Length: 317
Ligand code: FO1
Image 1 (spheres, rainbow, N blue to C red):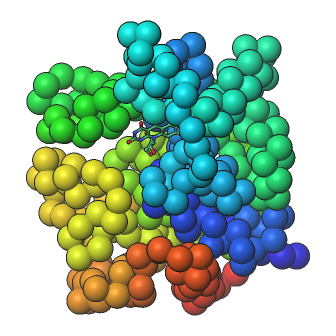
Image 2: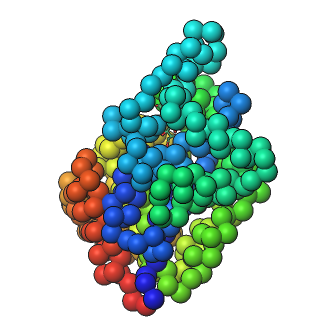
């Protein structure tokens, strides 16, 4: 039986590793479990940015400059909307818009988010399974010194400027982990779980907050490894390091490892942070250091290959 892997991801950094993993593992071996905490209802549409980022990345349609949205995009819709005095702060491209309209239509017709995501995955020719973390509504709230903001209002409209004091995930206590993911965590062929290099606070934590998931990860015999999104004290992309500073967490890969400590069997550092390996070893957490900044497709495949080899080195079925 082929070994199977679950990759937990959200946002642009995580999607890069997903692309590398998808090049090395067959469709039946690799499943992606994706954050939906930054979904929102906007202009009457259901927008799921963290589902769309890997959808576009895996179908080679993503915008290479932003990492989100589509390549070869045009902006007539949003520019016209702005000109009419509409809410134009969230950049919905003309091609991207088609996906949001279709998702919203299918959801309104009664399909669950998982079913809609699967239809969109197939429509994009993606072989690997892409799962929303839950079909239930969960909405990340960012608590800041200027009040509480819905995630996209904080992230895009306010450009991450307000200082964060914490996060909450509205609805998560009533949400149910995706059935396929639950089944996979109990599957004897599961050989590893990968926490992709995504923002720990707003991309991975909403997933880990789903009732029962942390326990399932602690109990599952397959190794759980994380890839650090922090390299030499800096976030490769996005506001992770800024959030750590505002939360008074040291801006280090070590702090990221400690954030996940209760569920991890191994940690992957960037080569620049090799000096942290002894500190992790002192906490009984095996770690390796490897180049982790993914620019080219080869970078993505190389990090995926190293991640799988590390998992194998930890795995004693
Ligand atoms: N991010 C931005 O910084 N500005 C935008 O205008 C923006 C629009 C957008 C549209 C569709 C989509 O799927 C993603 C979009 N993102 C935008 C990215 C998105 O806010 C973030 O990638 C995630 O929510 C954080 O993981």
